[in-house]
Image (cartoon, rainbow, N blue to C red; front, side, top):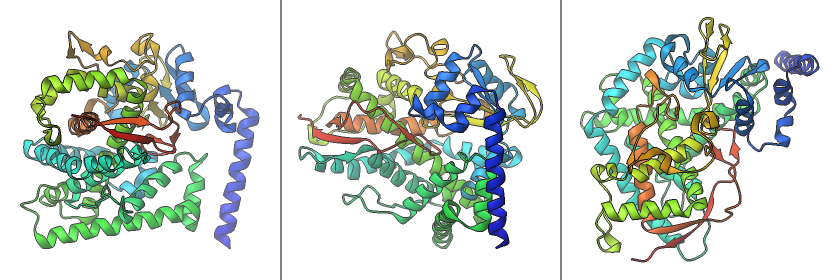
Length: 485
């Protein structure tokens, strides 16, 4: 009874607080955020932010009610991620938000714990043997499951949700890579995996915490074990139980000869909870980002068949065409010769980054290069989604899907990571960047060399659901047609 009264009182106090903000706040941005009036003109919150950032003379805005500075200025990004890196950690508010799911994993910590995991992960992910191991897993999943599934849907007007297919594909891969365990999500019957469903639900509900008008709401619900927080607790319990089973099995069977991440980390770490946190973080990063990137890429291809044709031409030029039923997978060396493919993938990620924005919290007062004053404790957000749509950053054709912008004399030329922070930049730059891009390119080549993919509703633009990574509401329904020899 006491807890119920406490929750009601907290909600009542919060309602009064929000009402006062609406009455007192003269900032149009804050008022639009509080009353959701921005939804009249924009389908996605990130599109509204892009609009505001484009209008701002500095490329930065303040959302006072959130205590947040949002920026799309590359110089500010470099300042946050490199120049004053120590002043902009992930911060306690972020760690608390995702703490139940990610614990003390690499994406949820700062300081010595982050440095230790970073060094360990860098050694593991940078080794040739583990990269070849990952490449072999991807190739096997493509050959044994992805291609047969698409072939089975070819020519019979069966509609597939390509986003769901990619999420299953990447979940199988990352579980094999992380645990040495195959959940079989992409088998013909498209089975339900309790672990995958629990992981999805935990990720979704953790992200929704960040949408609450105040952290008091979800914290009160967590204390009282109510609603979404009760579901989140149940989902995380399933994730924990699965992770513990994997750890116990590895310990019983021995792990010194295995290549999966869990086995490699167990050679250094003897704390089961710490092992769980690290591996769960890698599953989150390696599954959702790849699936998100591939979904956006094939939606863009549906809008630009000329790009698809050019990728096919490049593939046929670099890889000699064997009999159509026995097409080989490309090697790393062959993929390095496919500059247009790499440019197309990077261009897709520019317009649709899997992580649309990322936030840090200022340790001390600071001034950004655009002269924005940052008070201690302020949340500072850089916005890759908006940056990809800024004329001052990418030119007058910034809204166009144009792989040629990355090419000079036919060769790929990278951009500054602070102009293109899709994989973060500086000391926190993504360690799995090359592996993720290689996985995406393998999938793209395997599909477009064998199939024509047609989006069921090509006029429908992506609308994003609240999640830790960009997830398209309603998925991406497609028709599949097998190509001739």
